Length: 126
Image (cartoon, rainbow, N blue to C red):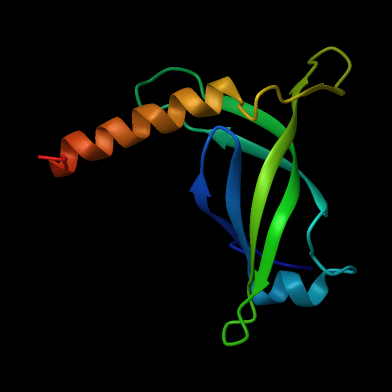
């Protein structure tokens, strides 16, 4: 059985993400991760302002994958191709195609996160 912290998100946007798979996951994976491989991803964006958390089900397709021969990790550039919502009555996920390469809720969250970083660090173009 594999443990925790076996994958991490290095970058997240409304249209995709960079996913890093650690050496134990790569070693245990039955198939190589390469361009075109699809993942079903479940993520929860935590609301730090006291509101409800925002759960997402996503189908992402690997656009590029690079193996780090020192760490044995695989870094995957992924494009979001479908978004799902869990139906509480049936327990099934209903899928819809991502339009214009954007999942709006994730886009809003990343935009707000970037604004907070710029305000906190005082980063500007001036």
